[in-house]
Image 1 (tube, rainbow, N blue to C red):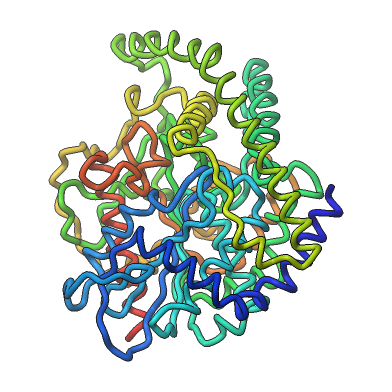
Image 2 (cartoon, one colour):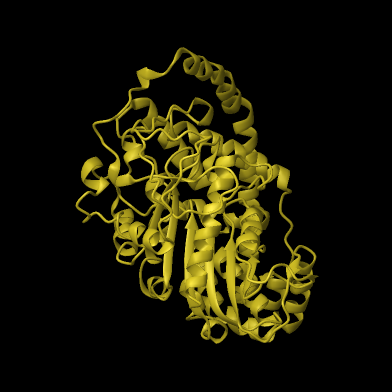
Length: 518
Protein backbone atom coordinates (compact mmCIF):
# COMPACT_ATOMS: atom_id res chain seq x y z
CA UNK A 1 0.00 0.00 0.00
CA UNK A 2 2.77 2.44 0.94
CA UNK A 3 4.66 1.67 -2.27
CA UNK A 4 1.51 2.48 -4.19
CA UNK A 5 1.16 5.75 -2.32
CA UNK A 6 4.72 6.73 -3.15
CA UNK A 7 4.04 5.94 -6.80
CA UNK A 8 0.98 8.17 -6.62
CA UNK A 9 2.98 11.13 -5.39
CA UNK A 10 5.83 10.53 -7.85
CA UNK A 11 3.43 10.44 -10.79
CA UNK A 12 1.55 13.43 -9.44
CA UNK A 13 4.79 15.45 -9.34
CA UNK A 14 5.54 14.64 -12.97
CA UNK A 15 2.08 15.11 -14.38
CA UNK A 16 0.13 17.64 -12.31
CA UNK A 17 1.36 20.90 -13.79
CA UNK A 18 1.83 19.53 -17.28
CA UNK A 19 -1.79 18.54 -17.21
CA UNK A 20 -2.80 21.98 -15.93
CA UNK A 21 -1.29 23.60 -18.99
CA UNK A 22 -3.17 21.24 -21.35
CA UNK A 23 -6.55 20.90 -19.67
CA UNK A 24 -8.39 23.93 -21.04
CA UNK A 25 -11.76 22.26 -21.10
CA UNK A 26 -11.63 21.17 -17.47
CA UNK A 27 -10.56 24.64 -16.43
CA UNK A 28 -13.60 26.12 -18.13
CA UNK A 29 -15.90 23.70 -16.35
CA UNK A 30 -14.20 24.32 -13.02
CA UNK A 31 -14.38 28.09 -13.35
CA UNK A 32 -18.09 27.88 -14.08
CA UNK A 33 -18.62 25.96 -10.86
CA UNK A 34 -16.77 28.59 -8.83
CA UNK A 35 -18.67 31.49 -10.35
CA UNK A 36 -21.85 30.33 -8.72
CA UNK A 37 -20.33 30.57 -5.25
CA UNK A 38 -18.58 33.92 -5.32
CA UNK A 39 -19.45 37.56 -5.81
CA UNK A 40 -16.59 39.60 -7.16
CA UNK A 41 -15.62 43.21 -6.71
CA UNK A 42 -13.79 43.86 -9.95
CA UNK A 43 -11.96 46.88 -11.31
CA UNK A 44 -11.32 46.76 -15.04
CA UNK A 45 -7.72 47.85 -15.42
CA UNK A 46 -4.52 46.40 -16.81
CA UNK A 47 -2.63 46.55 -13.51
CA UNK A 48 -1.18 43.25 -12.28
CA UNK A 49 -2.76 42.13 -9.05
CA UNK A 50 -1.81 40.54 -5.75
CA UNK A 51 -3.36 37.07 -5.37
CA UNK A 52 -4.24 36.09 -1.79
CA UNK A 53 -5.05 32.38 -1.29
CA UNK A 54 -7.17 31.27 1.68
CA UNK A 55 -7.08 27.63 2.83
CA UNK A 56 -9.50 25.98 5.28
CA UNK A 57 -8.73 23.16 7.70
CA UNK A 58 -9.51 19.51 8.46
CA UNK A 59 -13.17 18.56 7.93
CA UNK A 60 -13.72 22.11 6.70
CA UNK A 61 -14.83 23.88 3.55
CA UNK A 62 -14.31 27.27 1.96
CA UNK A 63 -17.20 28.77 3.96
CA UNK A 64 -15.02 28.64 7.07
CA UNK A 65 -13.00 31.47 5.53
CA UNK A 66 -15.99 33.69 4.73
CA UNK A 67 -15.56 35.96 7.77
CA UNK A 68 -11.94 36.62 6.84
CA UNK A 69 -12.96 37.37 3.25
CA UNK A 70 -15.63 39.76 4.48
CA UNK A 71 -13.17 41.50 6.78
CA UNK A 72 -10.51 41.78 4.08
CA UNK A 73 -13.04 43.33 1.72
CA UNK A 74 -13.89 45.82 4.45
CA UNK A 75 -10.41 46.92 5.49
CA UNK A 76 -8.32 46.33 2.34
CA UNK A 77 -10.13 48.75 0.10
CA UNK A 78 -8.45 51.39 -2.00
CA UNK A 79 -11.40 52.56 -4.10
CA UNK A 80 -14.52 51.13 -2.51
CA UNK A 81 -16.92 48.63 -4.03
CA UNK A 82 -17.47 49.76 -7.59
CA UNK A 83 -19.63 46.93 -8.86
CA UNK A 84 -20.51 43.27 -8.66
CA UNK A 85 -19.49 40.97 -11.46
CA UNK A 86 -19.27 37.24 -12.04
CA UNK A 87 -15.75 35.87 -11.90
CA UNK A 88 -13.97 33.35 -9.72
CA UNK A 89 -12.41 34.80 -6.62
CA UNK A 90 -12.89 38.10 -4.83
CA UNK A 91 -11.13 41.13 -6.26
CA UNK A 92 -10.72 44.28 -4.22
CA UNK A 93 -8.75 46.96 -6.06
CA UNK A 94 -5.23 45.57 -6.51
CA UNK A 95 -5.95 42.40 -4.54
CA UNK A 96 -7.73 39.21 -5.56
CA UNK A 97 -8.82 36.86 -2.75
CA UNK A 98 -9.39 33.23 -3.63
CA UNK A 99 -10.71 30.70 -1.11
CA UNK A 100 -9.81 27.15 -2.19
CA UNK A 101 -12.80 24.82 -2.25
CA UNK A 102 -11.82 21.54 -3.90
CA UNK A 103 -10.83 19.75 -0.65
CA UNK A 104 -14.03 20.14 1.33
CA UNK A 105 -15.33 17.83 4.03
CA UNK A 106 -13.89 14.31 4.26
CA UNK A 107 -11.53 14.88 1.33
CA UNK A 108 -9.22 16.47 3.88
CA UNK A 109 -8.57 12.98 5.29
CA UNK A 110 -6.69 11.93 2.14
CA UNK A 111 -3.27 13.00 3.39
CA UNK A 112 -1.23 16.18 3.15
CA UNK A 113 0.35 15.35 -0.21
CA UNK A 114 -2.85 14.42 -2.05
CA UNK A 115 -4.75 17.34 -0.51
CA UNK A 116 -1.79 19.60 -1.30
CA UNK A 117 -1.54 18.61 -4.95
CA UNK A 118 -5.30 18.83 -5.36
CA UNK A 119 -5.19 22.37 -3.96
CA UNK A 120 -2.21 23.30 -6.12
CA UNK A 121 -4.02 22.17 -9.25
CA UNK A 122 -7.13 24.12 -8.27
CA UNK A 123 -5.17 27.33 -7.67
CA UNK A 124 -3.21 26.86 -10.89
CA UNK A 125 -6.43 26.42 -12.86
CA UNK A 126 -7.82 29.59 -11.32
CA UNK A 127 -4.70 31.58 -12.23
CA UNK A 128 -4.65 30.17 -15.75
CA UNK A 129 -8.26 31.13 -16.42
CA UNK A 130 -8.42 34.41 -14.52
CA UNK A 131 -8.88 37.63 -16.47
CA UNK A 132 -6.22 39.16 -14.24
CA UNK A 133 -2.45 39.04 -14.34
CA UNK A 134 -0.77 38.37 -11.00
CA UNK A 135 2.63 39.63 -9.90
CA UNK A 136 2.38 38.89 -6.15
CA UNK A 137 1.06 36.03 -4.07
CA UNK A 138 0.18 35.51 -0.40
CA UNK A 139 -1.13 32.43 1.39
CA UNK A 140 -3.34 32.41 4.50
CA UNK A 141 -4.04 29.03 6.10
CA UNK A 142 -6.38 28.10 8.93
CA UNK A 143 -5.69 24.96 10.97
CA UNK A 144 -4.63 22.15 8.57
CA UNK A 145 -4.83 24.77 5.80
CA UNK A 146 -1.59 26.28 7.12
CA UNK A 147 0.21 22.97 6.57
CA UNK A 148 -1.34 22.58 3.12
CA UNK A 149 -0.16 26.12 2.43
CA UNK A 150 3.41 25.16 3.30
CA UNK A 151 3.14 22.15 0.99
CA UNK A 152 1.93 24.11 -2.03
CA UNK A 153 4.52 26.82 -1.36
CA UNK A 154 7.21 24.15 -1.63
CA UNK A 155 5.80 22.95 -4.94
CA UNK A 156 4.64 26.12 -6.66
CA UNK A 157 8.16 27.31 -7.49
CA UNK A 158 9.41 23.84 -8.47
CA UNK A 159 6.75 21.55 -9.94
CA UNK A 160 4.64 24.47 -11.17
CA UNK A 161 7.21 27.18 -11.77
CA UNK A 162 5.76 27.83 -15.24
CA UNK A 163 2.69 29.28 -13.53
CA UNK A 164 4.12 30.90 -10.38
CA UNK A 165 7.65 32.01 -11.30
CA UNK A 166 6.55 35.55 -12.18
CA UNK A 167 4.92 36.15 -8.79
CA UNK A 168 6.63 37.76 -5.83
CA UNK A 169 5.87 35.90 -2.55
CA UNK A 170 4.69 38.39 0.08
CA UNK A 171 2.84 36.96 3.09
CA UNK A 172 2.44 33.50 4.57
CA UNK A 173 0.11 33.56 7.57
CA UNK A 174 -1.31 30.70 9.61
CA UNK A 175 -4.08 30.64 12.20
CA UNK A 176 -4.16 27.87 14.82
CA UNK A 177 -2.13 25.55 12.58
CA UNK A 178 -0.52 22.38 14.03
CA UNK A 179 2.90 22.96 12.49
CA UNK A 180 4.56 20.56 14.94
CA UNK A 181 1.85 17.97 14.47
CA UNK A 182 -0.54 16.74 17.14
CA UNK A 183 0.45 15.02 20.38
CA UNK A 184 -0.64 14.83 24.01
CA UNK A 185 1.54 15.13 27.11
CA UNK A 186 1.02 13.68 30.57
CA UNK A 187 3.27 16.08 32.44
CA UNK A 188 1.87 15.11 35.84
CA UNK A 189 2.18 11.38 35.11
CA UNK A 190 -1.46 10.76 35.88
CA UNK A 191 -2.47 7.10 35.26
CA UNK A 192 -5.95 8.11 34.17
CA UNK A 193 -4.66 10.68 31.73
CA UNK A 194 -2.14 8.20 30.36
CA UNK A 195 -4.99 5.86 29.43
CA UNK A 196 -6.96 8.73 27.86
CA UNK A 197 -3.94 9.83 25.82
CA UNK A 198 -3.44 6.30 24.52
CA UNK A 199 -7.08 6.17 23.42
CA UNK A 200 -6.93 9.60 21.77
CA UNK A 201 -3.75 8.78 19.85
CA UNK A 202 -5.29 5.53 18.66
CA UNK A 203 -8.42 7.35 17.53
CA UNK A 204 -6.47 10.13 15.85
CA UNK A 205 -4.30 7.80 13.80
CA UNK A 206 -7.26 5.62 12.85
CA UNK A 207 -10.37 7.67 12.19
CA UNK A 208 -8.61 10.70 10.69
CA UNK A 209 -7.32 8.76 7.73
CA UNK A 210 -3.94 9.43 6.16
CA UNK A 211 -4.01 13.03 7.40
CA UNK A 212 -4.39 11.86 11.00
CA UNK A 213 -1.42 9.51 10.73
CA UNK A 214 0.68 12.35 9.33
CA UNK A 215 -0.39 14.85 11.99
CA UNK A 216 0.50 12.39 14.75
CA UNK A 217 3.69 11.41 12.84
CA UNK A 218 2.76 7.82 13.60
CA UNK A 219 5.77 6.23 11.84
CA UNK A 220 8.46 6.77 9.20
CA UNK A 221 5.89 6.30 6.43
CA UNK A 222 3.95 9.30 7.75
CA UNK A 223 6.72 11.82 8.43
CA UNK A 224 5.75 14.36 5.76
CA UNK A 225 5.72 17.11 8.44
CA UNK A 226 9.41 16.49 9.06
CA UNK A 227 10.23 16.43 5.34
CA UNK A 228 8.36 19.71 4.91
CA UNK A 229 10.99 21.48 7.02
CA UNK A 230 13.75 20.76 4.50
CA UNK A 231 14.56 21.18 0.82
CA UNK A 232 12.08 22.85 -1.51
CA UNK A 233 9.57 23.42 1.28
CA UNK A 234 11.86 25.49 3.48
CA UNK A 235 13.33 27.24 0.42
CA UNK A 236 9.81 28.17 -0.69
CA UNK A 237 9.02 29.66 2.73
CA UNK A 238 12.24 31.67 2.64
CA UNK A 239 11.01 33.48 -0.45
CA UNK A 240 8.13 35.11 1.44
CA UNK A 241 8.66 38.61 2.76
CA UNK A 242 6.60 37.92 5.90
CA UNK A 243 5.87 34.69 7.78
CA UNK A 244 3.28 35.05 10.55
CA UNK A 245 1.62 32.67 13.00
CA UNK A 246 -1.33 33.36 15.32
CA UNK A 247 -1.72 30.86 18.16
CA UNK A 248 -4.54 30.43 20.67
CA UNK A 249 -3.29 30.29 24.25
CA UNK A 250 -6.52 28.81 25.61
CA UNK A 251 -9.92 27.35 24.69
CA UNK A 252 -8.64 25.76 21.49
CA UNK A 253 -10.14 22.29 21.53
CA UNK A 254 -8.07 21.04 18.63
CA UNK A 255 -4.64 22.68 18.34
CA UNK A 256 -2.60 23.44 21.49
CA UNK A 257 -0.43 26.51 21.79
CA UNK A 258 3.01 24.96 21.32
CA UNK A 259 2.31 23.42 17.90
CA UNK A 260 0.65 26.51 16.40
CA UNK A 261 3.36 28.78 17.87
CA UNK A 262 6.13 26.46 16.58
CA UNK A 263 7.83 26.09 19.94
CA UNK A 264 8.95 23.44 22.39
CA UNK A 265 7.75 25.49 25.35
CA UNK A 266 4.12 25.85 26.45
CA UNK A 267 3.45 27.83 29.65
CA UNK A 268 -0.25 27.08 29.41
CA UNK A 269 0.13 23.33 29.08
CA UNK A 270 2.78 23.16 31.81
CA UNK A 271 0.62 25.08 34.30
CA UNK A 272 -2.66 23.50 33.13
CA UNK A 273 -3.64 27.04 32.13
CA UNK A 274 -3.39 28.32 35.68
CA UNK A 275 -0.81 30.99 34.89
CA UNK A 276 -2.02 34.56 35.22
CA UNK A 277 -2.19 36.41 31.92
CA UNK A 278 -0.50 39.68 31.08
CA UNK A 279 -2.01 41.40 28.07
CA UNK A 280 -0.07 43.68 25.79
CA UNK A 281 -1.86 47.01 25.44
CA UNK A 282 0.97 48.33 23.31
CA UNK A 283 -0.60 47.35 20.00
CA UNK A 284 -1.52 49.44 16.96
CA UNK A 285 -4.61 51.53 17.48
CA UNK A 286 -7.26 50.59 14.93
CA UNK A 287 -10.99 51.12 14.57
CA UNK A 288 -12.27 48.01 16.29
CA UNK A 289 -16.04 47.75 16.24
CA UNK A 290 -16.41 46.58 19.84
CA UNK A 291 -13.66 44.94 21.90
CA UNK A 292 -9.92 45.17 21.51
CA UNK A 293 -8.07 41.93 20.69
CA UNK A 294 -6.37 40.24 23.64
CA UNK A 295 -2.73 39.64 22.81
CA UNK A 296 -0.49 38.17 25.49
CA UNK A 297 2.94 39.34 26.48
CA UNK A 298 4.55 35.92 26.94
CA UNK A 299 7.70 37.30 28.49
CA UNK A 300 5.69 38.90 31.30
CA UNK A 301 4.26 35.55 32.42
CA UNK A 302 5.46 34.52 35.85
CA UNK A 303 5.70 30.86 36.80
CA UNK A 304 5.51 31.88 40.47
CA UNK A 305 2.14 33.57 39.97
CA UNK A 306 -0.07 30.55 39.48
CA UNK A 307 -3.60 30.26 40.76
CA UNK A 308 -4.69 26.96 42.21
CA UNK A 309 -7.59 24.98 40.90
CA UNK A 310 -8.78 25.02 44.51
CA UNK A 311 -9.71 28.64 43.84
CA UNK A 312 -12.77 27.50 41.92
CA UNK A 313 -15.85 29.08 43.37
CA UNK A 314 -18.85 27.02 44.41
CA UNK A 315 -20.66 28.24 41.30
CA UNK A 316 -17.88 27.04 39.02
CA UNK A 317 -17.76 23.66 40.74
CA UNK A 318 -21.51 23.30 40.24
CA UNK A 319 -21.08 24.09 36.55
CA UNK A 320 -18.45 21.39 36.32
CA UNK A 321 -20.76 18.87 37.97
CA UNK A 322 -23.54 19.76 35.55
CA UNK A 323 -21.21 18.89 32.70
CA UNK A 324 -20.64 15.33 33.92
CA UNK A 325 -23.91 13.94 32.44
CA UNK A 326 -23.07 15.58 29.11
CA UNK A 327 -19.63 13.96 29.09
CA UNK A 328 -21.15 10.57 29.91
CA UNK A 329 -23.74 11.05 27.16
CA UNK A 330 -20.97 11.98 24.75
CA UNK A 331 -18.90 8.91 25.59
CA UNK A 332 -21.77 6.41 25.54
CA UNK A 333 -23.95 7.60 22.65
CA UNK A 334 -22.50 10.30 20.44
CA UNK A 335 -18.87 9.19 20.36
CA UNK A 336 -19.65 5.66 19.08
CA UNK A 337 -21.97 7.13 16.45
CA UNK A 338 -19.34 9.64 15.38
CA UNK A 339 -16.75 6.88 15.22
CA UNK A 340 -18.98 4.76 12.99
CA UNK A 341 -19.61 7.67 10.62
CA UNK A 342 -15.98 8.75 10.55
CA UNK A 343 -14.68 5.20 10.13
CA UNK A 344 -17.01 4.78 7.18
CA UNK A 345 -15.72 8.03 5.72
CA UNK A 346 -12.12 6.95 6.26
CA UNK A 347 -12.72 3.67 4.42
CA UNK A 348 -14.53 5.59 1.69
CA UNK A 349 -11.63 8.00 1.25
CA UNK A 350 -9.18 5.08 1.14
CA UNK A 351 -11.16 3.52 -1.69
CA UNK A 352 -11.25 6.87 -3.52
CA UNK A 353 -7.50 7.40 -3.22
CA UNK A 354 -6.86 3.86 -4.43
CA UNK A 355 -8.92 4.78 -7.45
CA UNK A 356 -6.83 7.94 -7.87
CA UNK A 357 -3.63 5.90 -7.74
CA UNK A 358 -4.84 3.54 -10.44
CA UNK A 359 -6.04 6.39 -12.67
CA UNK A 360 -2.79 8.30 -12.35
CA UNK A 361 -0.73 5.17 -12.96
CA UNK A 362 -2.69 4.58 -16.17
CA UNK A 363 -2.21 8.20 -17.21
CA UNK A 364 -5.90 9.07 -16.90
CA UNK A 365 -5.34 12.41 -15.18
CA UNK A 366 -8.07 14.04 -17.25
CA UNK A 367 -10.59 11.55 -15.86
CA UNK A 368 -9.12 12.00 -12.40
CA UNK A 369 -9.76 15.74 -12.29
CA UNK A 370 -13.15 15.53 -13.95
CA UNK A 371 -14.42 12.82 -11.63
CA UNK A 372 -16.69 14.35 -9.00
CA UNK A 373 -16.64 12.53 -5.70
CA UNK A 374 -19.52 13.58 -3.47
CA UNK A 375 -18.81 13.37 0.25
CA UNK A 376 -21.06 13.39 3.25
CA UNK A 377 -23.15 16.49 3.76
CA UNK A 378 -22.18 19.40 6.00
CA UNK A 379 -24.46 18.38 8.87
CA UNK A 380 -22.85 14.96 9.20
CA UNK A 381 -19.39 16.46 8.91
CA UNK A 382 -20.25 19.04 11.55
CA UNK A 383 -21.59 16.38 13.92
CA UNK A 384 -18.39 14.33 13.70
CA UNK A 385 -16.23 17.41 14.05
CA UNK A 386 -18.08 18.69 17.12
CA UNK A 387 -17.97 15.28 18.80
CA UNK A 388 -14.25 14.84 18.22
CA UNK A 389 -13.44 18.40 19.35
CA UNK A 390 -15.49 17.93 22.51
CA UNK A 391 -13.70 14.68 23.27
CA UNK A 392 -10.16 15.97 22.89
CA UNK A 393 -11.02 19.15 24.82
CA UNK A 394 -11.27 16.95 27.92
CA UNK A 395 -7.50 16.57 27.68
CA UNK A 396 -6.75 20.22 26.91
CA UNK A 397 -8.08 22.20 29.87
CA UNK A 398 -9.92 21.51 33.02
CA UNK A 399 -12.10 24.47 32.18
CA UNK A 400 -13.60 25.75 28.96
CA UNK A 401 -15.23 29.10 28.40
CA UNK A 402 -18.20 28.68 30.69
CA UNK A 403 -15.79 27.65 33.45
CA UNK A 404 -13.16 30.19 32.48
CA UNK A 405 -11.45 31.55 35.57
CA UNK A 406 -8.47 32.98 33.73
CA UNK A 407 -6.76 35.49 35.98
CA UNK A 408 -5.36 38.58 34.36
CA UNK A 409 -2.68 40.56 36.14
CA UNK A 410 -3.64 43.70 34.27
CA UNK A 411 -7.37 42.92 34.58
CA UNK A 412 -8.86 43.55 31.15
CA UNK A 413 -12.55 42.65 31.15
CA UNK A 414 -14.73 41.91 28.14
CA UNK A 415 -16.20 45.41 28.18
CA UNK A 416 -12.82 47.01 28.69
CA UNK A 417 -12.41 50.52 27.32
CA UNK A 418 -8.67 50.77 27.84
CA UNK A 419 -7.07 53.15 25.37
CA UNK A 420 -4.32 51.34 23.53
CA UNK A 421 -1.06 53.17 23.03
CA UNK A 422 -1.36 53.10 19.26
CA UNK A 423 2.21 52.20 18.31
CA UNK A 424 2.85 51.77 14.63
CA UNK A 425 2.34 48.47 12.86
CA UNK A 426 6.02 48.57 11.96
CA UNK A 427 6.96 48.63 15.66
CA UNK A 428 4.43 45.93 16.49
CA UNK A 429 5.66 43.57 13.77
CA UNK A 430 9.26 44.12 14.84
CA UNK A 431 8.43 43.38 18.49
CA UNK A 432 6.60 40.14 17.74
CA UNK A 433 9.32 39.01 15.36
CA UNK A 434 11.81 39.14 18.24
CA UNK A 435 10.18 38.48 21.61
CA UNK A 436 9.41 34.79 20.92
CA UNK A 437 13.04 33.86 20.45
CA UNK A 438 14.59 31.71 23.22
CA UNK A 439 17.76 33.82 23.19
CA UNK A 440 15.71 36.84 24.27
CA UNK A 441 16.98 37.86 27.76
CA UNK A 442 13.42 37.84 29.14
CA UNK A 443 12.28 34.75 27.25
CA UNK A 444 9.34 32.84 28.70
CA UNK A 445 11.18 29.64 27.75
CA UNK A 446 13.68 30.24 30.57
CA UNK A 447 10.75 30.61 32.95
CA UNK A 448 8.70 27.57 31.95
CA UNK A 449 11.17 25.13 30.40
CA UNK A 450 10.55 22.86 27.42
CA UNK A 451 8.21 20.01 26.58
CA UNK A 452 9.40 16.41 26.11
CA UNK A 453 9.06 16.51 22.34
CA UNK A 454 10.12 13.45 20.37
CA UNK A 455 13.01 13.71 17.93
CA UNK A 456 10.78 14.34 14.89
CA UNK A 457 9.09 17.29 16.55
CA UNK A 458 12.40 18.70 17.77
CA UNK A 459 13.61 18.68 14.16
CA UNK A 460 10.44 20.45 12.98
CA UNK A 461 10.77 23.19 15.61
CA UNK A 462 14.49 23.66 14.97
CA UNK A 463 14.24 23.82 11.18
CA UNK A 464 11.21 26.10 11.02
CA UNK A 465 12.62 28.48 13.62
CA UNK A 466 15.74 29.02 11.55
CA UNK A 467 13.48 31.31 9.53
CA UNK A 468 12.25 34.69 10.73
CA UNK A 469 8.66 34.65 11.98
CA UNK A 470 6.18 37.09 13.45
CA UNK A 471 4.52 35.10 16.25
CA UNK A 472 1.40 36.40 17.96
CA UNK A 473 -0.18 34.65 20.99
CA UNK A 474 -3.86 35.54 21.30
CA UNK A 475 -6.53 34.86 23.91
CA UNK A 476 -10.11 34.40 22.76
CA UNK A 477 -12.67 33.99 25.53
CA UNK A 478 -15.00 31.59 23.79
CA UNK A 479 -16.36 28.07 24.02
CA UNK A 480 -14.14 27.02 21.13
CA UNK A 481 -11.32 29.37 20.21
CA UNK A 482 -10.30 27.14 17.31
CA UNK A 483 -13.52 28.05 15.52
CA UNK A 484 -13.56 31.62 16.71
CA UNK A 485 -10.09 32.58 15.50
CA UNK A 486 -11.71 32.81 12.04
CA UNK A 487 -15.28 33.54 13.26
CA UNK A 488 -16.75 30.48 11.57
CA UNK A 489 -20.27 31.41 12.68
CA UNK A 490 -20.06 34.73 10.83
CA UNK A 491 -19.14 38.24 11.93
CA UNK A 492 -22.72 39.08 12.87
CA UNK A 493 -23.34 35.94 14.92
CA UNK A 494 -19.98 35.18 16.52
CA UNK A 495 -18.72 36.38 19.90
CA UNK A 496 -17.29 39.90 20.31
CA UNK A 497 -13.88 38.40 21.15
CA UNK A 498 -13.94 36.41 17.93
CA UNK A 499 -14.88 39.45 15.85
CA UNK A 500 -12.12 41.48 17.51
CA UNK A 501 -9.60 38.80 16.56
CA UNK A 502 -10.73 38.71 12.93
CA UNK A 503 -10.61 42.51 12.78
CA UNK A 504 -7.07 42.41 14.14
CA UNK A 505 -6.10 39.85 11.48
CA UNK A 506 -7.66 42.07 8.82
CA UNK A 507 -5.70 45.16 9.89
CA UNK A 508 -2.48 43.17 10.24
CA UNK A 509 -2.82 41.65 6.77
CA UNK A 510 -3.68 45.06 5.30
CA UNK A 511 -0.48 46.51 6.72
CA UNK A 512 1.74 43.64 5.60
CA UNK A 513 0.50 43.26 2.04
CA UNK A 514 0.19 46.98 1.41
CA UNK A 515 3.65 47.62 2.82
CA UNK A 516 4.99 45.31 0.14
CA UNK A 517 3.53 47.63 -2.50
CA UNK A 518 5.57 50.61 -1.38
